[in-house]
Image 1 (cartoon, rainbow, N blue to C red):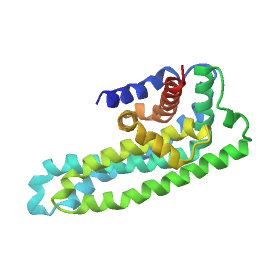
Image 2 (cartoon, one colour; image 1 turned 120 degrees about the vertical axis):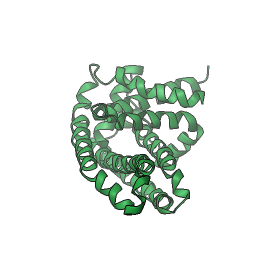
Image 3 (cartoon, rainbow, N blue to C red; image 1 turned 60 degrees about the vertical axis):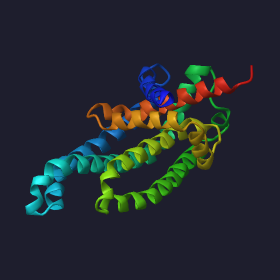
Length: 242
């Protein structure tokens, strides 16, 4: 749990970086993308939530709405925000790669060597391709989670399962920027996160909480990229031989 809390603190540390010189211009375009997509998500939720809840229960079970509503609301929030986050990250992936590199330059005085030697068009192809691979991985997990959500009795644990999935997925999403700049493939990034499981879940939890808070969610993407980069740099420095 200590590492889990550290992961949440790592996420918060990204706020101190996003508006520093040399970094903030890489924040603007992803920020605009994230703002637009999450505003759309909030609008859709506000329009549909009551109708979904009403259609979920027959009239004679309407008295259960007070119990079902929080569970259903959490599940829908995770699904919708997770979906919009995937879309936002697909569009913003190349910008996030350069944002991560600029943060690393600020922290260490050098950009990742793999990115320095990579043409812009290759960066775009690499980052978008990585996003597609992550989407396939995430979508494969959506199938058992969706089944869990609709099976009576055991679906009471669905919100908690969705929460863990969202935290893990968000940690994979944003650790990809600094680790991908180092030439690591998605399978290697998953292994990296597994080796730092609780800290990665803490980082993902921090990002998920940001995406769930109006206004603050607009900053979630650049803050998460900065935080993941800072964590990666910190870990790399710790692992260097004395």
